[in-house]
Length: 125
Image (cartoon, rainbow, N blue to C red; front, side, top):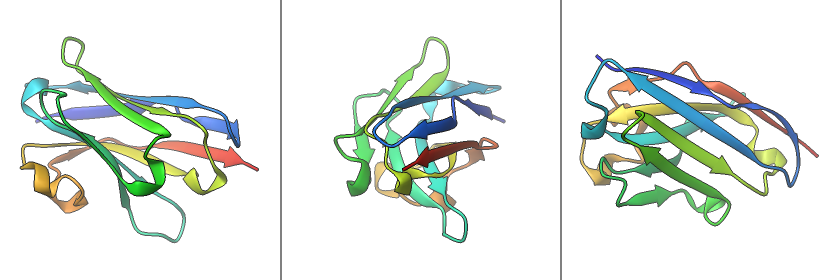
């Protein structure tokens, strides 16, 4: 059983930056690929980024490519999402999730086994 706890959300102006963190406990962190998803009010949960168990491969949805960076530190069981050049359309609750699944499932939220409680990111115009 893996527990995930996100932090780092908040209110920021358009063009600003935030770094989200997700701390894991209760499992072998390095076995899992990690993903970030987001959900805005009235919208479906959508894939943002994912990173393989080793950190050697990363994946991004097109709207965040070049602005967001996912990384992980297996020594301290934490995954990060650095978000730069934020836009109002990035406003959402951001969730981290863990999966033992294969890479072609990384964009599918239902393929993840464990989820954090979410952290709110609000970008003002």
